[in-house]
Image (tube, rainbow, N blue to C red; front, top):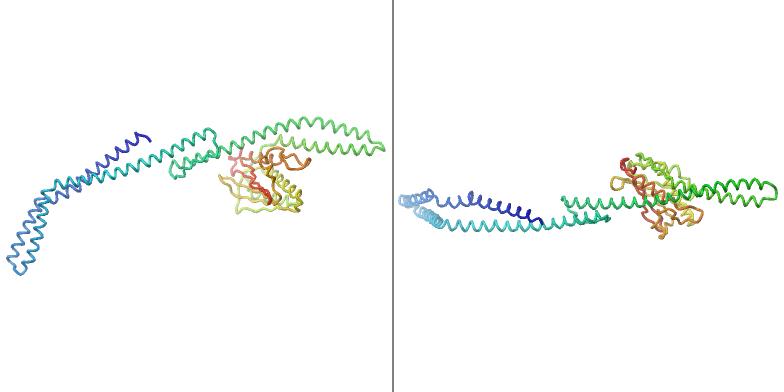
Length: 406
């Protein structure tokens, strides 16, 4: 606790108490005591007693009444004389009692102030430790101060800043990791493109040389080799697309209208899927790139269709639901009723090349690309839940263009 502040406060309280005591004695208790010993009051009471005697002599029928008045007046006069004789001692005792009361109030107020100051110092110490932890990079701080005053609001700001910094660090770490994978993909695509082109040219030359009769088996082998080269070419194209993922050109759109259009356009794109959209109650403005959002939704629906087909579940449903998210954003949930995602793949679900598909069915880049698209929007893509009842993803977008990532 600040000793100087405590001394200043205590001195101020003492001065205030002394001023109150002096004012009370001067304006209230002092005049009250002096009032009882005024000569005019004493002489008036003595004159009243003489009058009562005179009236009793002149009106014998009401003598008892005058006598009782005389005795009452005499008793009052005796009390005033006693007060006059002891007023200094009574005044001192009264001042002592008043001073004791003021000191008691002062002690209670001082104790309350000390307790309040100690509690304030404890809260400020927690703020100091929280700021130190924040500067050290500690994530998800919980100061635990829920007060409505300035200190409580500052504590809440520190906690909010900690959570925001944790999100930003997580986002930047993911983007750095993804950038490394993109560079690797670019190099692989570059190294693979040249021999692929040469192999295709040689295969075409071989097919021309095998144009004669009796060489059907050789042509079948050449065709098979061509199919494998074509598949390898598609993988190379995926490498290239991943390595050169463009930045979104975001504009403010009504998210509900964009998703409704996607559902209407792709309703029959997956034979094993039914697309169901739960529209929001009103417009949901969001800063997004329509084409890139469509790419993300196609990736998610492709995964759902493949999971449902591989589990021999027949037809499945993908439900899309949009709404308002915290911190001025909007969200879109995409949930299916398929078999869910295996527990061993969930921790690295959004890493490049993480896949549960069979060899030849994909490279595991779809979710990594989708997450980067959302991060580039200034939002995120998260796995909400995954169990035997299906998988659920949440896409978040900012409302305004200035909040979207550059």
